[in-house]
Length: 397
Image (cartoon, rainbow, N blue to C red):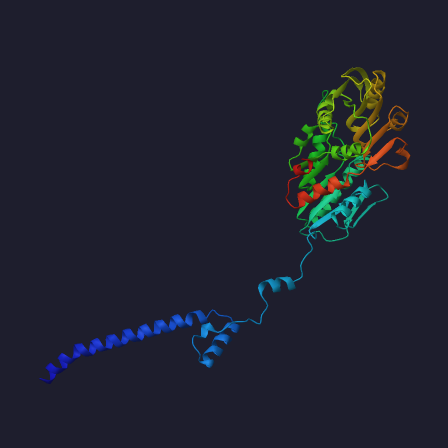
């Protein structure tokens, strides 16, 4: 009978134990839920929660929390911040340092310190005098006369920046030498523009900024991005500030420059266009044949990308005078001015010769009719847009 009673009581005891075990598990789970968030709280939050418990008033989570540690914004503000232009570095070769200095001044940065010297045997030595690690480096160097010296100097500067761990290397070439050697006019000729483009790429440059290339197809010779800018806005702004007769005509000195002259005429109050037809007899030699268009009684503005020996533009100006032009202005971006350009341009046939400072002109190449305009602001804006991953074409719109 006792065994029967024990057997009868056994199910109830088991049920009671099961209920106690379930209740204990529920309590543990509830306690775990309460403790779990506190395990991830910061020391300051735990201190406030414990203080709320001791106060014994209501929910400890209702206690106000005012952290002693500064907020994230304050911590970031307290950290040393780099200036917006600390990653922008501009260096100059020896070809046109005044232009590079103007560019740096416009951007509000200091021109980079670089040591460039030549050994007794003519070899070029380049050493950067400041760190460029992780920086966007822009090297300003027109490859004007002496072309080979300036081009080799640029190659060595590129290599120095590459070995100094620069993030990107952009070469800024206001005047690109060898640009006229862009095709094979005769058999067994070298395409030197393509060779120069390949050498710039192999030296380590990541991007090229060039101004008024002699021909647009030469831009395709580069295997890296190229930003082609134009000196026309600088000249157009200057012409707009002058009191020139409204009866203007824009003249292309040869058939190859018609596209350039047409774009110039469109921006110059949609002026009419004339073309000088010429037959080139040899390198740096040309013969003017006849004029296409009307220039009688008008002010003629001759537009070209460069003036080298001035044979083409001077012969064209003489033809314009014969056809009755009232005055002749010569405008170009690159003033190469190889002999005898000074004698031809200063002979009195031109009212004014307007050029930019893409090439540094020494004192012996200056004459009364010459006006040199600075393109530093235009180049600086291009550098800034490239540095900020902006649109370069928007500068000219």
